[in-house]
Length: 233
Image (cartoon, rainbow, N blue to C red; front, side, top):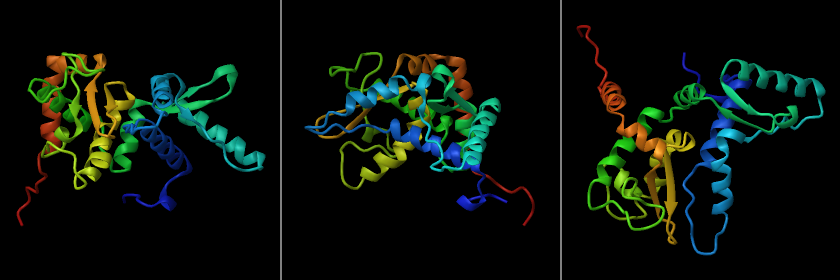
């Protein structure tokens, strides 16, 4: 039986899902619009994410037993290789999901995983070899040009419209979220709040690995293959 409601989730699962939600919120594409200056602070938090994680909020309770149980749960998740903790001076200041836990939680929540991120990264490589790639505007380079987010939609679109806004801010960002926190893909925005994606050196290295690319292509093909029932009707 598939568990789909909060009441059916364990306390550990709820905690891990909250860590996932905070992580994806941190790495959501920051859309700069004139007068907003929070981008540098967001960039700094993203830059140090693998070291610091996201802030862990302890239970809002005065019950010492509940706080102890909470600490034990976090410790158990760490020993189970589901969490990595930032513990300066012996006190937990931040947590992040391990790669394995990230994949498990995204599947549990029905979200795209790293495989979908890699598929989007392959599209970025293909677009980067066309005239649609932007190489003349910082932080773009010839090796890692900026790719307009609309071109990464399926099917791709050439302009930003109100109709594709939801697909850009929800569907596309969720597909690239696993690659964002791993440092494979970065984002940029112009003064109109329009978004762009580009591959980092780590992302480029993965895309240039021919053996990894062949395995990835097979995995994507297998996942997209429609399920069928071989039994006679």
